[in-house]
Amino acid sequence: MPELNAFDIMGFGLALWGVVIGALGLSRQQFPASRAGEALVATISVVLVAGAIASAIITSIHEEGTEPDDKAASTLQVDH
Image 1 (cartoon, helix red, strand yellow):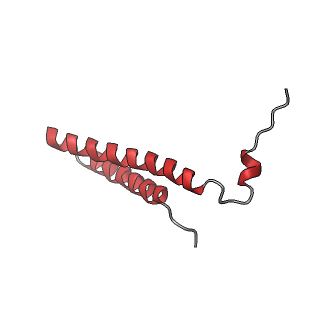
Image 2: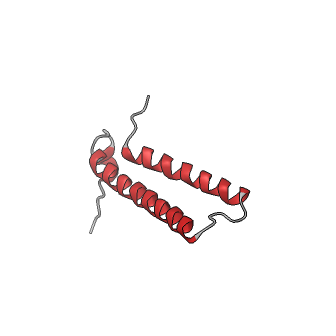
Image 3: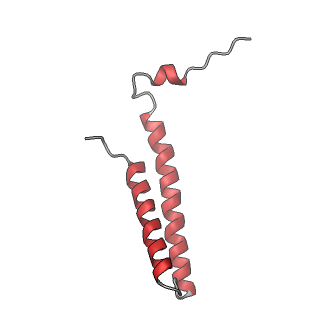
């Protein structure tokens, strides 16, 4: 079973949020019904996107060099 990292969890949460918001938007003509609801939806969306981006960056930093082929793939030789 593959290991889960923070980006997997945040990405899944963001995708799930998108499905929920899409379903609510399609099923309710007045969604969100108030300015407070709009602010709440926007805030949750921004937090989830920022969390997914931050977790992707942090995960990539911590996982750098863990794969055997990682060094060969990241080495670039330029001839002058």
